[in-house]
Length: 113
Ligand SMILES: CC(C)(COP(=O)(O)OP(=O)(O)OC[C@H]1O[C@@H](n2cnc3c(N)ncnc32)[C@H](O)[C@@H]1OP(=O)(O)O)[C@@H](O)C(=O)NCCC(=O)NCCS
Image (cartoon, rainbow, N blue to C red; front, side, top):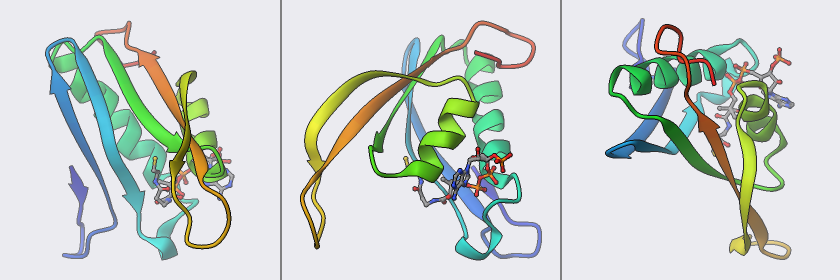
């Protein structure tokens, strides 16, 4: 899913699904366009599309030190259900844990968790 109103990619989300479960593999907004609500928009659209596809639960992994993404997901009712220690290697500094987040989709109308 891309947002490209003027031919430039402003943001994207990549997902996959296996029956009743879906996974957000990657989600990003162009650096100069962040904090304008695009990330939340992409996430809402993903959840709505998941509901349409009868996907009951969405998962994703996020680095523990990725505060922006963690806030985005927490605001969208994702909660932490697991941890992979030292999952993300860093060029400088120690590896960072991955947090597994889950959102149960319960509303067919809106995609709300
Ligand atoms: C994470 C990311 C997608 C957020 O996109 P965005 O368009 O800036 O997000 P939004 O403007 O929709 O923000 C939604 C909420 O997320 C949180 N948030 C977003 N950026 C934040 C930041 N830098 N610091 C703290 N909270 C932040 C806020 O709660 C925000 O709500 P608010 O603006 O009302 O306070 C963007 O920062 C990004 O592309 N990061 C690099 C890629 C990445 O880390 N992807 C996630 C991998 S799991």
